[in-house]
Amino acid sequence: MTERVKAHGWREIVAPPLHGLEAKAFAKGLCRVLVSHEDHGGKMRWHLSISCRDRYPQWEEIKDARYSLLPVGLTFAQILPPLNDYTNIHPHCFHLWEIAEGEW
Image (cartoon, rainbow, N blue to C red; front, side, top):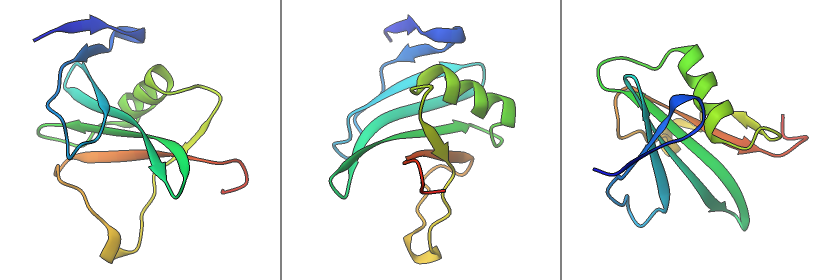
């Protein structure tokens, strides 16, 4: 496994491709993170998924990943879509999505 250290101790790790999604994977302590820049309706938006194997990530871990691995000058939110659109493969995972100024 190839690893490179990123800001604040996050290590970049090699992860298998996910449904054709181009993403970077990182690890720190018990947390694992996937960061991608995805097309949503013609607009590119950042997406961060953070998980721990046996528990939900804590607030400080989420905040550390967000400010270490995503552009600092942007706003991110945890979105809860309508139940029919909700998808989460990992049982202990949270998602942060880039939102544009004025969307909140």
